[in-house]
Image (tube, rainbow, N blue to C red; front, side):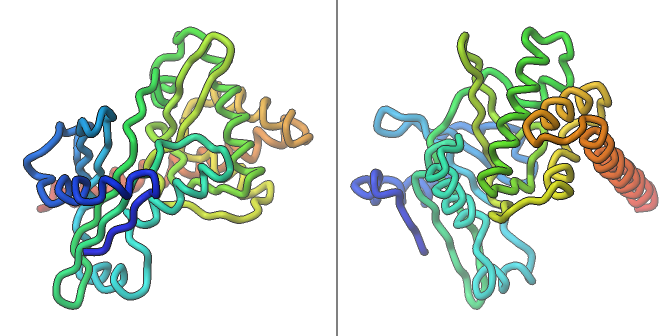
Length: 251
């Protein structure tokens, strides 16, 4: 087993290791657990999230052992980078990697649990939500801040940004961190980064209007490019979904 800890939690090393070794019998499952399993666990007066990543296929078992960082390691390291840039994300606690034979087996990522009022998904499905446009514009400014800080969040999708509403400000925090690039983003890459968030034209209009103000480009140009990538993603998504239905039908 390989493990790395946030220095603030090194004194709890043994206890945290025991949580991982007894993962099946501790905590409460959080979310649907379709691919990965997330559990919340009371620990030393705090609530932890422990994410157990699905065991990879044979090719990735080799890749994660010898050539690539595991999802747990990336999640931990990326959270540290975001913290250093003052970008919201639940505090990283530790990660663990297990190996079997010549290959990689399982990995776990521990962070503090963070409550929120909503995610971007609620903005998509609840257009009458109070402060809807205010939140959407603030989210756009948050995304612009990511881009300016050279953060390309590859899983920038409806469920991966936690939103906390205060009377005087709106706070955002990223989760599901294992796919990120840290690089300078040109206009095309910035617009492409919005593609997975919503299929609603009216929401893209608001986001493109706000982003245009920040990047000092004509709002028509920003909307055109943002909407192009959104539609392109939707076409591919629907095509993939239809293909899966056909495969399921013929099985």
